[in-house]
Image (cartoon, rainbow, N blue to C red; front, side):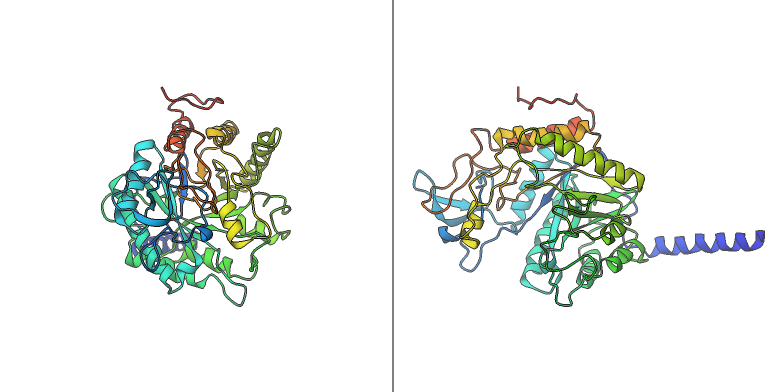
Length: 421
């Protein structure tokens, strides 16, 4: 028995060594764990079409915030004008200089890094794949240059129900590892690891309004591949799920199979956007109770938990353009100059969160962006935009940096909205 046990042990050691030797991932990174970090989501989908003009028709504007473009090296004309009559200009996410500036801001203000959103359509051989890959390539270079953490988040939005599954994500991950060296970038290695393994996020399982279900998209096969493939696997996994995933109700499908999938993850990320509001009395108590229950469940199942925080929400222009019978108000979840954002941050940290996910870095479509936006957006009789409540354009970048410092106990946690001196 001793001889057999010894042989089995040797065999396991040999297999593990072979797997390590075949792996295409870097062996070390500056960011070996998500814990202690504040990360944000990065869309990177803003680019001119056709004639090079951004948003030429003000009746088809889909964004509710306007970026402060004063620091961009390259900007592009739009079909809107500012109050002084000048043409309103926008950036292009595929410009290397744009991505570089964004990562420069991350370092300057103390945001640890970003999850690069890679939507399902970008895993197919489409124009979207090419553009998304350009942005990701620039981001990997900028992340190394500015020592910022970076990771890939596959967003299942765009996945259809007609026999389509997650197979294209498997092939896309191979492509990113082989062609972009995504987990082993040139220069400083900053791809985000967790538990010592490259972290890959999969967002969008368990939502009832999707054309697919958690049972019919091959999610188990995808997880097995990312965890166990000898060349491309050996990864940690973060799953983006509905707010009420634990109870399987409200914004979540009532299917216990979801819990079976979640128990295979390393991190759970519930989507909190639009679920809580400063306009509801004591809504932070409800936010706290949801998180505490989630943390308890995750602890019992040996899974890490990251809360989602966001500065506000608005999708008036998108709804007006695409859902004319259900137009949403401007600023339906108001920012209040940063108070709502800070209420969530404080509540999450005082509840014991050891990492944060900020939605989002550049999401101006739904009014959740934390990057620099202007308090003087274009004027229009059709499109309407939220403003910055008289705060500086970098208000939310600065607050995010304050959150990171308090998370790491580099300064005392404060319930009161921080003020600049």
